[in-house]
Structures are given as structure tokens and as C-alpha cells.
View 1 (cartoon, rainbow, N blue to C red):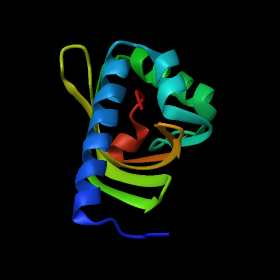
View 2 (cartoon, rainbow, N blue to C red; view 1 turned 135 degrees about the vertical axis):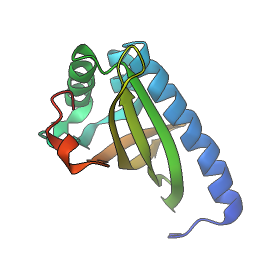
View 3 (cartoon, one colour; view 1 turned 90 degrees about the horizontal axis):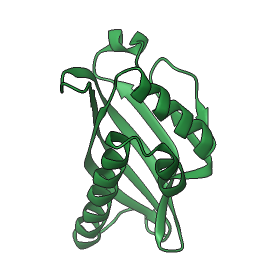
Length: 143
């Protein structure tokens, strides 16, 4: 089991991770929460947003994302910073997340850590941990 990816592997993983982040953000903006759950989150997934209870499973994550959207957080932007292959079928991603309203006004900014498992040809999130760039945002009603 490799614990560190080569530069070439990291470049390929970064392309994959950037594509996943783009697609995830697009589905959120289009309010395709069922698609988000089915495409990105495993049944065992745990989403740990700042200041909120853990969302369990694809259904729990879907409901959480839907609640954020319904409270006015319509623009989710995910940027990958670091990507590493932990084993043949486990990848970790570290990056930034921002949330804006329909007028593109900033609502939330933070960092995330995701652990993904490869199932067939797809990468599925099993752990997704967010934190806030501003500790006062942990009580943000939208997140």
C-alpha cells in the first residue's frame, strides 16, 4: 500500500478531484440533491459541518445540503488544494469551500477534508469534514 503518491499520480488525481468538485458544485447550484446523494455519497458517509450535527449516509447528507439551499445558500464552490492516494481505492482531498446566496453575496468560507473510496469506476465520499475560516461562523444559521 502506497502512502504517498508520485507527482504524476498527484496530477492525475488532482484532475479527477477537480472534476468531482466541479460536478458537486454544479449539482448543488441546480438543487439536484437526489443526484448529489446518489453520485457522491456512500450509504456509510458522515458529513461533519461546523457547528451542526453529523449528517449520516447519503440520505442524511442530501437532507443537510437541501436545508442549506433552502435557507438561501445557493452557490457552493469547492476548490481542491491537496489530493493524495492512500491506497489503490482510497483517496483524500483537502481544499476550500465557500457558500454564497443567489446574489453571490458571501455567506460562509472554510476548509474541508474528504476521504473517498473507489467503487467500480466511481469515487464515493465516506467522510467529509468542514471547518470555518471564521470561528464565529460556526453558529451561522445557514450552515
